[in-house]
Length: 84
Image 1 (cartoon, rainbow, N blue to C red):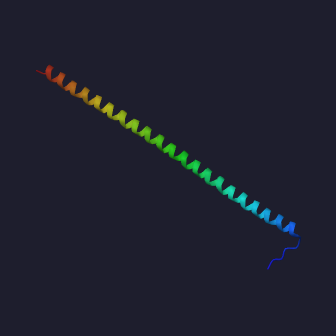
Image 2 (image 1 turned 120 degrees about the horizontal axis):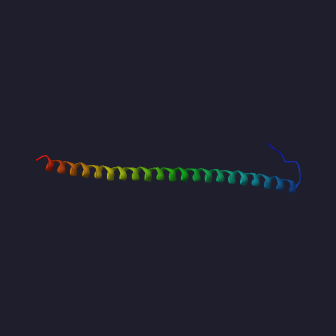
Image 3 (image 1 turned 90 degrees about the vertical axis):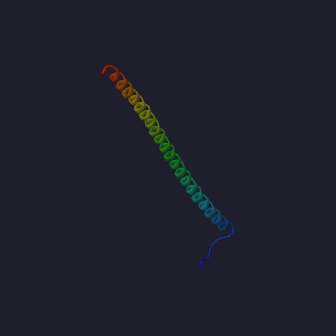
């Protein structure tokens, strides 16, 4: 068993120091949690940006493929007219 040597004020001061230490630890944990949340949010934003870029590339590819198909079709029709 631990006996505290000192007066009432010293005991109160010791309890206050312990409480302050616990509060500091809690604040540190909260800051770490907030930092993790910010990192997660940044990763999500980066993922969303990559998805938007991929979607834009796919859309451009589809447009280019469609235009190329139209050009091939038009060339076939023109070629068919000239091959009479």
